[in-house]
Image (cartoon, rainbow, N blue to C red; front, side, top):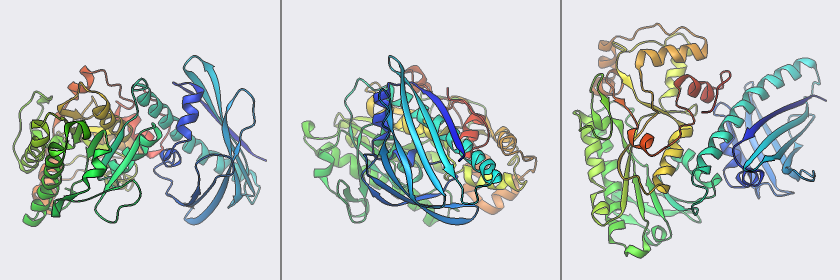
Length: 461
């Protein structure tokens, strides 16, 4: 029977590492972006006898797997076992062993005993390659998450309302918060489930009682800007941001001071700075020009009622989020894989980006760190020019990235959106985060791309 094993050192105690695994969102947090997996049944979390049933695709074939959680049964170590009850393998048993290694440190040892139906050596080689890729991702993410959460270990856990919780960033934030021991209440426009907060910005409706039970609100909701900017689309982009922000700000301001969230984290974007060429932009820099700059200003100003009421308001000006699950990276990677990657226009425009693992931690820092208020650049400390981004992505994917896309073609195909989003940019530095000691897990672009795309070794800072 083939055996696969990998181990990694963790920056927290065995007890804290085990606690992370017992919380909602742990399975999803450790699932690589390229492994499309759907949980279709779950009974409990990882307590003995709890079941997890999932669907996933392997080599284009849809598969189903039912796991039962069992105790590790090793005195002196913490952990658990996942054993296949039904599924595609002849057998599968994974041990998650957490070994204390010192004061405040531990070691995670993953050990899988498995057998493919064919039972061939080819199956083992293919299986080991896939497992190596998967566990490289899992261990890097776990290290990064635990290090970020350790920064707030001495503070009480928070109850956080999150709007846009089903979006790319919102989904990741909810999982990051819950595995860190926080409680999340999703703000939903449809039917509210247990613990959800119903709201409808278009009708100025919000369940105030749900907000009263929260320590913080993180507001991420807003229409996508990745569409052709017709007059109707631009109006929706603006309305979707200002309307929801204003409703939340007015509602929070009107609540009794002793029974309302203490912090309102209302998203913004680096587009606020406009196109500034090579100018280095920090939170001390002024507003730029253009549609996105105007939207950003109106978006931030809509939070004024909460600010005027004495609530701590933070505006994370978010850069391009690098995630293997979607967003800007997906079309860039797809084009690069077929040899169409390369400079857009001059290629000299700056791209201010941030790793998904870091943006969730940045938003959490905005909730936890009372020193943070006002505008806060939510980007990695190393912005790059677009041609260097294309070159790095090509290097990671082992593809050429020299196919130029003329600026005229971008403007013709995408109009104003193409000009502002693709041909212009900002060279933004997260000065406020750096001054407050925020530690980025992925400050380097190549390491971030390798992590998100599962392409070779990468290091966590």
